[in-house]
Image 1 (cartoon, rainbow, N blue to C red):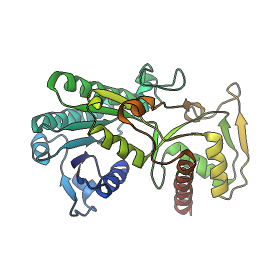
Image 2: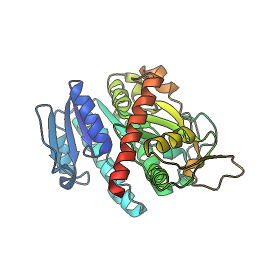
Image 3: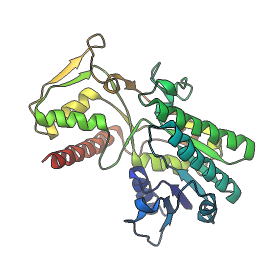
Image 4: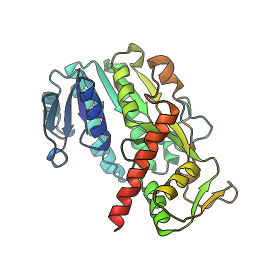
Length: 311
């Protein structure tokens, strides 16, 4: 299958490219010139330097393309930029995909559209309150992109599938909150976490597997799915950070009544992926113990990276 990854030069795109090429697909990465300059084409990898705000370039890019995966996002905090850039680019890409009659259009969204979890586990039926997200402009714009995707699916027949996840990891794992915990541990400062708080992390190869399943399953058209691989608490993650950083930081477990730390570390994101399992046959590629090992290797790599930067 020929798969086009819009915004494919980013971290998630890098992992998806590796998976899809290994599984025998041809991947075309579509991204801005400044992001693709270091990439090298291969026999099953094409590089397309284009911007989603250029409709003509998109039409040429989608020739012979069977599936489109939209990963492109600026993560800008300015709603003017989000809607004039990201949302317009998303509309252009959908229009080009519909004209090219692609077999599947996958929109990679975020659990941030739920805002703050109102109940557990978080299913697809959970109310969407993106204005309550930690980054509300991001959540609102991503939710708008989802709604546009599903509307285009219903009105114009573009075979859209939407995926939501909380936090993805590959051979490393990023995030400002995580890096802050690592820095604290390296300085020997106390690490405070809320008892039971944590979230469902998604392995990058599980995202690739879910996308592959959606491209061949008719039930996926017009549907929205949560994805995850394993649930980890901040207590577990904090203990691992202290170990990998060889730190003497104390790990303090607080209750909800005494919690004064960052809101992010006080949230619980128990993402339910039962719908994807039932309708698509999705399941994590690794068993829980192996997935935990993979996550810890990614975490250890992140600790080493932060340590190298700090030196």
